[in-house]
Image (cartoon, rainbow, N blue to C red; front, side, top):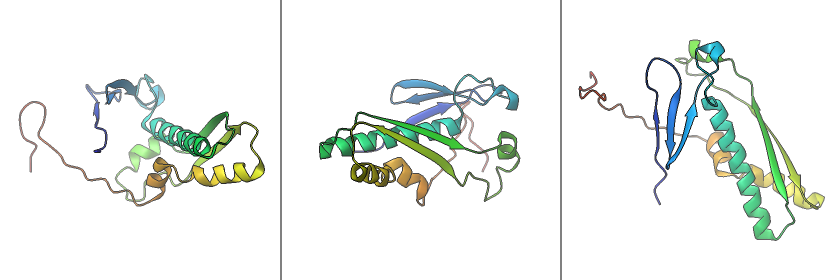
Length: 152
């Protein structure tokens, strides 16, 4: 099955970006203090949300398959970045976040062996594996919306 197509559009001169994710519409933006309008989560917020939701879903699937009494999963994520430094250093090859902090709380009458296994399984979620591995992004620049081709 091919991957989902996500389409984003950043109209005008601000950072507010419209997102269409498989028919679900969302907005991403940057905080007002860095030139955005604060109309939605930042791209990094969305990245952390992807990791957190994938972690919870992975733990739920694993516990269900094992018949374990997992009642709920709460994942808290943090990253330490500087909006201004991101923009100033974006053309530098080493400009990236190098650490995300993830805290997981699992609810239910789980024993220590089950809890330890769930901690191990949390690192097996597909988004975690993608972020921690060698992720390759192929980018193609197409012509503009106005009908003119981008210069070569």
